[in-house]
Amino acid sequence: MAVVISACAPRPGNEALEAVPGTITGAQVTTVYVATTRAPRGVGSTAFGSAWSLGTSHAAFTVSIPPTHRPGRVEWPNGKIDPVTSFAVLGSANLTPDQYAGTLARDPRLPAGIGLYVHGYNHTFPEALYRLVQLSVDAGTGGVPVLFSWPSAGRPLGYLADRDAAAFSRDALSRTLIDLVAKARGGTVSVTAHSLGALLTMESLRQLRLEGRADVLDRLSVILAAPDIDPDLFRAQIAVIGRRRQPMTILVSPDDRALRLAGRLGAHRGRLGTLDVRDPRVREAVAEAGITVIDISDLPPQGLARHDRYVEMAAMHEDLVAARSTAGTPLAQIGHAGVFVLDSLRGALTEPFAP
Image 1 (tube, rainbow, N blue to C red):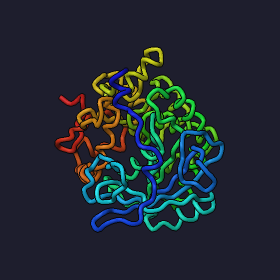
Image 2: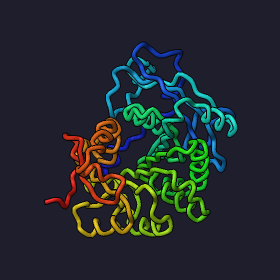
Image 3: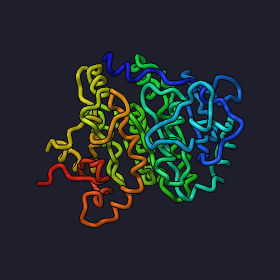
Image 4: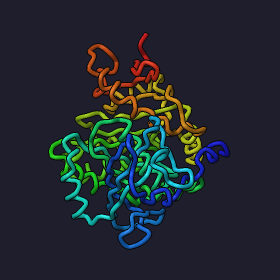
């Protein structure tokens, strides 16, 4: 527990999002949108803390990414915010629901799709925002990045409070998904949900099915990264959600220490994100549920908790898409139910049951 907690120390607060006058030559600049159940720290403020809000706030941030950016990393400011070396906010605005909808609908990147990120446990608002920026820039898909930020306490010992905060936000996420699908103009909304954000996402998808919103569910492409979900709870959720046009993808690492700790806190029950894809029972369950499971243990973790390997996959996006078009390879099977192991050196997938 001490190792995991020390690896998940609190990150910088909202002072890291103070706007700077401008960027520099060679820096990338992107605008991200925010829907959040965190309460703003003042009327019209774009500073969000850990307090819960019954209403959903909206905002937009324009962020500069330094020329020295390394894929998979967030370059945090060290003291004074400097666009030469760190991520930097160039401007932000609190938006009314109508302003948010109108601005997003006019975004020129919309034809390339919408990518929604739902962060996990122990995330401050700045970390969630900058993680989305990193994922968006590294993947290079050119779509519209949107953050759904629920009121995580942003503290290593706030796990139980975070579980409640995630459950508190499920209706707001369902409404956000409905709105984004409407804005996508017939395109797909890609959802990446990490850790407890995956539990929140599954509950929202279940809610959409119960509301009869198949029109929304059919337009969602969902990735659950290191999902902090009890496997039996997941089976119950899938039973309600049902098979989807595009199989859900689950990224797992059996050696994820944060999820092992979560399992101990949950009466020693396993977590979905630590599934062993080499277990024949997992293969049978995956085929029955119609989902895709990928073991990403070969990717380097950024911390001792081994809970964040998924951030490295964004930089591999173009290579994986290119390899997917090669017939006869395991990667070409993505989009179908199955279990795979990621080989990070070759940027390819292998089937764990292949001879």
